[in-house]
Length: 389
Image 1 (tube, helix red, strand yellow):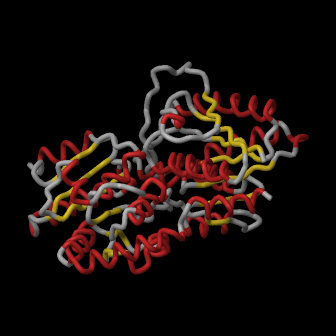
Image 2 (tube, helix red, strand yellow):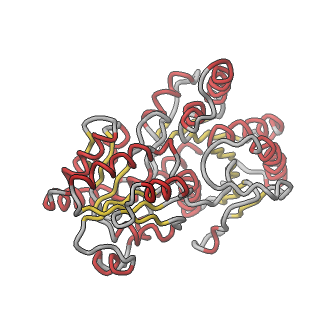
């Protein structure tokens, strides 16, 4: 099939939303489908890192000053999305796709408009939701309640009903959208890990030396966006508790934007115990994880987003500290060290418990390395292909 992917985001940037879009597309391409991605005017080119025939088509650079790569709302995206409708309509008209695969609520709305404008083509629309739009905006402090929040919530529920098929990345989001959609049909398509990136890496000690990490300390690593809705506040408070009780632990924080995290490290004089790597390329992620001993994910369930970073930790054979969410349990099983409460204190206690038990770290890491084979992008792509059919 010919698939038009609508990505209302600066694709490609090194964060979870973009990883899902890229890896789904690559896996579908391996199954023989032809992929065209319509996206914003900014973002890195994927051909420099992967061999692919995927075509990326960008809107014009009329908003040449807009260079924001991090997650979060911005009023200027309204203009970008209007331009993206034009681009997607042109591609749908000229390329004649069989399927429009639209990511995020904005993308689904754009895809629905294109589908209705070209109704005689009978193009099918697949809605790929990555979380709750309203809850994400609240988490970024763009909505605090009142009439505006009610309007966004109404709009989100309207979009949740769009598409001939609906996908989500987490069980929590599936349950919510099932209650909203009139057909009650939603499929959970979990994120995956590209295991080929983790093959033939140097040893952990060699990589610790390469990244100049302390060889005699337990390396606890967080990778991903450094924004509030990823649980960064939990992590910062937990770091202070952990380092007060155990100086044999060293933290690596890799992601962007790093300004607030740099301030946190400077204000608390943590430069000897915390390393910030920013930005970190997705394609260099396997090496830094292979140099680590524990992966940590402080995201709670407030936005209903999945935690794709956990799968990267698992692919590297790391034990994982996280909150006790349904999606995290699905991924990790016995390979997770689950915080007893959703708080910085709970996260810190889980880190201290795991870091102080070398045998448990090894056992949970081995479990995760074995379980990751159940969460490949190839498996996810085959499920998507069934939905296309």
